[in-house]
Length: 272
Image (cartoon, rainbow, N blue to C red; front, side, top):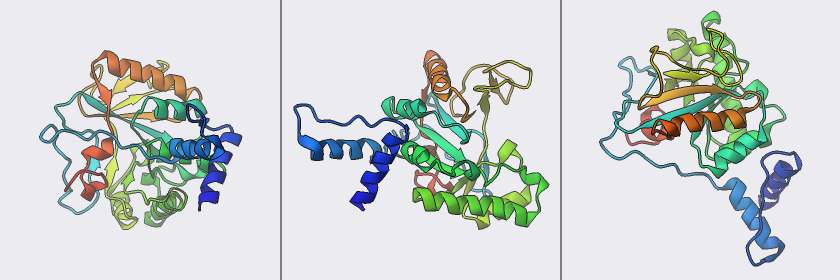
């Protein structure tokens, strides 16, 4: 097992993904350096949890199907960064997530994971959950039940096989879903469907043609406590992350880990 892990570290470095700069002040030799490298790459982040009584956890749907969540009611000035797809691989982005300890949640379209396992493994161990965004980014509303089942269940199978945890949160491409989607998602082990309350059109243009715009679903301006923000893996993602982090901090907010605000019954880490 140690040999396999070491090979993974070497592969990350050799493949050009986020650099692991080991070394112990004052020396320590190759063994100490390797331990430092393993620690840097493989140590999962533990994100700050909300203070009791400061937020209202989403509730299960009375139907028993995965509820649809677009924001988290909270008194704290926190927002939740979520990133979809996975077809661009910016190594500096992972370095920033690790170095600045930025909680994010990744929704993977698994067709893009092929031959890029090291990249998302490094991101997973920088603290990002790997959740389900289908196999090939199909519009769920256009597919029958069996087609939706293949898109959701097969993506969960791939993510579980590669990253050691089966997804429990689903984001349908384009936000498009119906009752069939929710039923099939439940059968595939999904506990909640996470949409968004705002989108940062990083690396592209908003519907009105503005490049790199921040757009709220309610038509308002700026951030609101509990916003779930949608971004995408696009070229220049590292710089785009720095941009939105600047906006967040200027408005007195901070990123938080959305999984810590979701109860376990809905795929998160909170009690309930």
